[in-house]
Amino acid sequence: MNELLHEMHAWMNDYMRSFRTDDPDVMLGIRLKEIHTGYVTANARALAKHLGCNAHDVALAEIIGLFHDVGRFRQYAVYQTFNDAASEDHAELGLKVLAEDVDFLERLTPADADVVRFAIKYHNKKEIAPTDDERKLFFAKLIRDADKLDIYRVLLPFLAPDGAEKAPNFVPSDAAQEVSPEFVADFAAGRQADYYRLRTHGDRKIVRLMWIYDINFMWTLRRIVERGYVDAFIESLPAQDGIAEGVARLRAYIERLCAQND
Image 1 (cartoon, helix red, strand yellow):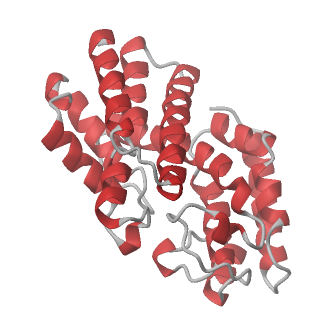
Image 2 (image 1 turned 180 degrees about the horizontal axis):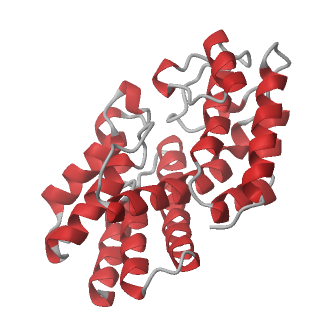
Image 3 (image 1 turned 30 degrees about the vertical axis):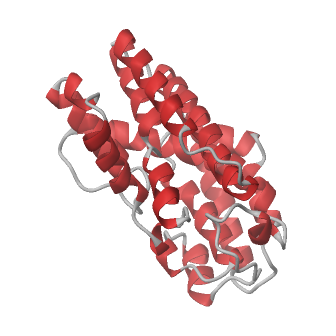
């Protein structure tokens, strides 16, 4: 497994570099995704170790982290955007890349390959598809946590009123700070919001804050809180009816869960 993992890292590094360009606007997004890939891979490995996984499963978590966003690069090359709603689901596209460009998954056991495909497919979905396969579910939850932990870091510079305009083009340019009424209602009720209905910069902040309810492991939640991501998002929200109710519900939820252990 170690030799295969080394080959995977080498290929992924070369693959990401192949999308580099002299255009500074394009490189802003590409470089962001290169760095994000590194962080998520490290997060996945660290979380797997924390959860007591054996060496084989730690390596499997690392593989999933390494390839979870491989579709992002072709997505940008084809559509000039990182916005799934305006182009193509990047997880599905990533599975196409892995099937068409390399044979790495075929070199895993069929069971491990299925776990990798399942985890990548559902890392960006609103919910994980129901399954009786506990390993698939475990690794899907792990990569979703590893991914969200780093996305909070990525989004911090874009929380200001002009944040959407400063972001690489994968963030839509509408910088309106108001939160749409249906998103306020979802936030106040503690319900996951549908990111395909996003209209404003404020909506995007609510969707990301609501990810807290979808964090699976206390290891991840504690790091999100300790690094100040929750406070930064809350402080950037507009003063609208229903927002304070959503904030109070979220903080109570975080306090309750952080008292638990994985």
